[in-house]
Length: 253
Ligand SMILES: [Zn+2]
Image 1: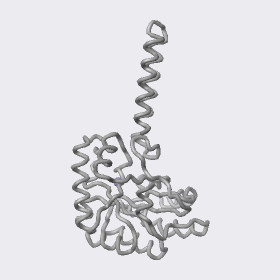
Image 2: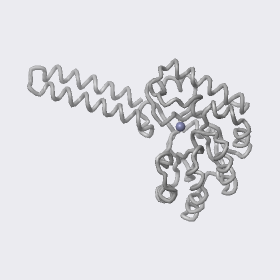
Image 3: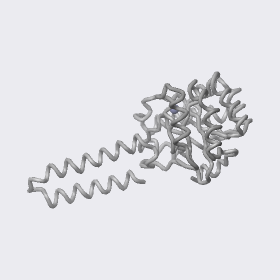
Image 4: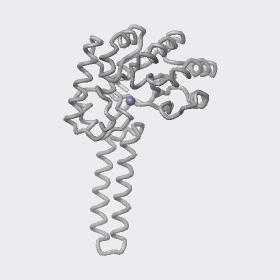
């Protein structure tokens, strides 16, 4: 993994600096520069799933279709409205649901599956401090979400999305242990930040291109409001939305 390569390069550069520059005036500045570069790379790796720094994540489709994904549901108000729109537009999506919300709305989980969409694991609690969890605590969290989702759906849920998209070596170990495949995104809608429907619609329409995996949230009114126009205008621009999803292809990257 890129993280291991980065550690090896860092160790090598530190060793070389110590051997070659120990008595030089450049020793300390070079040491600080190498360390800062290492730390910046590490931080970017935590923040940007797209870098595939700690673990491999699928961030684009292999074909030309665009896959819409919805995080943080199920939501009793917005998820059914989103499902209505997806049905009218014949688009299939993945809903990365939070285990404890799913438990409260089993009928929405059943509807998502019966209409040909997929369920993904988005942890049990969606604790915002999860990036600081130990591997054991992450495994405990994922064991709970997996048990909940399996009970609700009658099947194993092999695809996962990290809350806020933050990953680290603990996530890499926990996902490997739980045999879960990370699904990222190539286009972030910023629907959690954007409060202006028109701006969000324009952003989505102008940025969406073939093979994109789009990150949206089905617990937000704005995402529901924008969805139909976004899909219809994108279709008019020649965008094809996924009309079926093969989970095996997702797992294999
Ligand atoms: Zn989330």
